[in-house]
Image (cartoon, one colour):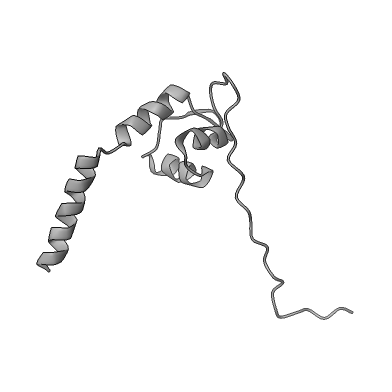
Length: 100
């Protein structure tokens, strides 16, 4: 009879899938292609989808998610901050830290 080991076997690290460019002229895009267009990982895109803060998406069935390229670009444009907005936010944050 074989003895049961009390130590766990070493776990293998799961490697992230390499970003994949979208197929030419393909619309709608699958999550890997959409993540490539946005410059995000598929995990980040999934997290944004679950929280409702990401780009709009289609769900033709329970396991399938698709994105329209126009929706991705619109979301990206709406979430882009200008340099002056970022500088203003950082200045306020720095002032708040100095005031402490």
